Image (cartoon, rainbow, N blue to C red; front, side, top):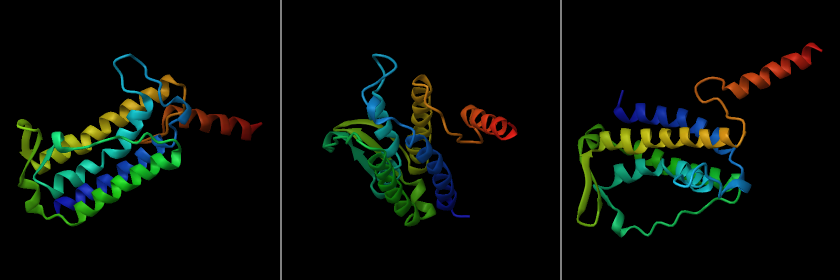
Length: 176
């Protein structure tokens, strides 16, 4: 199996879970945050939606220079817009993965801010840490935000407590 095939399979599986959690994000709480040092819910949701694009950044260039970026996050005003951001990022990632070769993953990739090198690592390490694991970290953070807002959390690796409660309620209703 080519390395890209494993990454593609994982991306497909994980983005289904990401889609489910992003569908739960309430638009009327975009400025809410659990702590003064925390990111706002709307910003976090957009970050989760956009993170798969790091896969394309990593595979299609030797570096990313933050000082040359004119990044302005677009805070989604609807669930459809948020899912559209995710779909666009995943499409870019899938295209980059499909066009990659095993030898590409051993090439070095650098993240810098002007002359300051933040890190320089093989692309396969950057993909696992800065793209995939970074995404899962923030998706988990998003699930905590939703829990604190008492919004049901969809199951990602099997049924969630909310899924089980809904099932139990449905079984009780059916029995009555």
